[in-house]
Image (tube, rainbow, N blue to C red; front, side, top):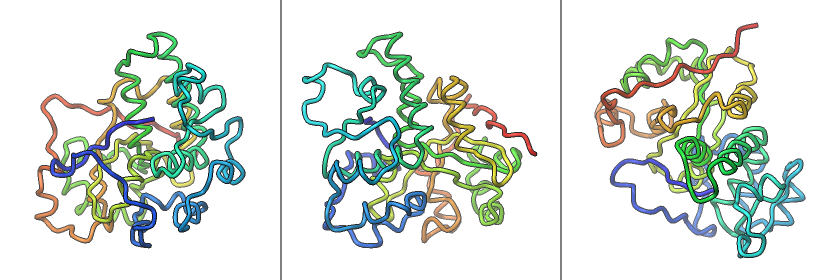
Length: 279
């Protein structure tokens, strides 16, 4: 799927991913890649993995990657309909589509739920019209991050876009895992993270749960049921460079940069987090 990544105003021009041969180890050091450690060789090796290699290597139950080469003209199917039939159109030698394949392997329940909801809306509205729910699904697919909190009170500063309150004043909670990135779904975020220092913004769903809870399964079930992602305004923007330890400069002046750490818009209210009851 295609979409846009929200960044600081100066970084909003169209993104062009670096060539594979131009990347160094620093290009893969961003914490956004931590969840893909099992597939590190597929992104860091000098040569691009082929589609057949990816199909042999990745756990994609019920689905396989196919080369995207004039596919709509061949079968007339919408991208999402084709995915629902088990074929994920993929551009070879393309970072965006490689990360998409890796997210399918890492979080298949999330990706399958997103696809099922997209197909539901396509069936209702047709393939040439997009409603607000489809926009939300796409934004999460491209830039989505799942955040786990041990106590819903920890996100009160986030509700107000009080970024100093969320990040430096709660640095201990981040370090202890009371607030934590549970999963990175957005393959466009990963693509942009290939450029070190780029200030990225994730679009987040939040789950209130104790450590060890299956947060990803809870989000997948909520997407499948239409409990979330019916409107893009449900998604909380999270300036990822503000997370303690995620950027080399995190002084007061950094958090005061309103073009990146944006103030709350008048009338903007975020939904309560999803809940996994304590055992």
